Amino acid sequence: MTVSVKEWMTGDPVSIDAEAPALAALDAMIDHGIRHLPVLNQAGRVVGIVSLDDLRAALPLDVNLQRPPSPTERNTLRETTVGEVMTHAPEVVSADAALDEAAQRMADRRIGALPVVDGAGRLEGILSETDVLHAISTRLWTDRVRERRGQDRELGALLDRWRAERERIRHEVLESGREGDVLIAQSRLGGIDDEERAADREGARVADSLRSFAERRLAALDRALALAAEGRLTTCERCGKRIPLPRLRALPGATSCIACARAAEGEG
Image (cartoon, rainbow, N blue to C red; front, side, top):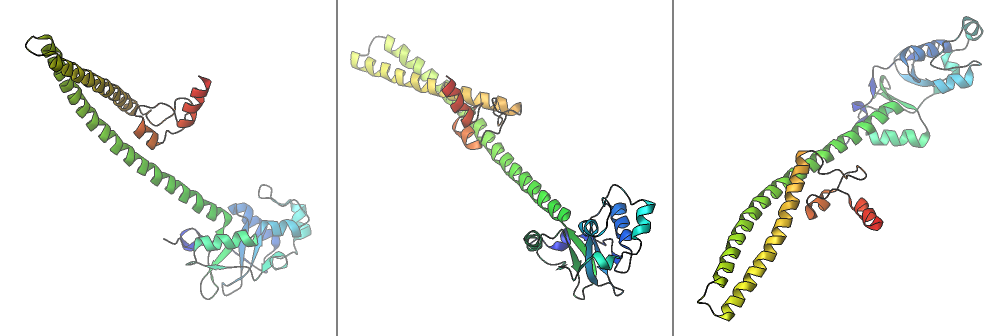
């Protein structure tokens, strides 16, 4: 979806007349903590823009937003007007223009602010560098929140799968344990020949091996679910960075990211 200038511009901006003293423009900037003033004619149309840099270049004094001019400085600069120092016929933008295009114009032409005008050239707002930065930071924050929510949903689904797998393994380990005990008991009884006894022993060995694998998997799942309950499942214990979900899917209960795991292996 295209984001418009109107969504991020500063509406009802402070403006000034071209015939006003340049010191009045500086006073307005100091009072409102701004760096740009659209300059309007009597019909409310934008005819120029004056910036703090314009005032610094034109006025022979230390121009900044923290210190108002002294009375002596005011007396010496009283005759200088906004029209003498402003940028005439400045770049403007419409409220329905795309924000990214306006920001690109500002970057390409090194413009600190764009007056926002209607079809007749009357002032509707101003789009400053600060407004653009707010838009970018908000977009980045929104993207991060959306990404975290997606990761949280994936993690929740993974935990559900782990819980279901843990219950299946517990049941299967219990059943395989019982079957192994039966096979061992039968092999010790008389009435079966050596071939059957050997087959039973092999079956018991295979069952015991599978049970060992299942028990290790069960221990890993228990460890992973315990870490999740403590809020530590996705955090690497060595570097503190996030452990990617694909690694956790492959190794439930992993306590380090792949980089730290490799580093630990190298240290070992």
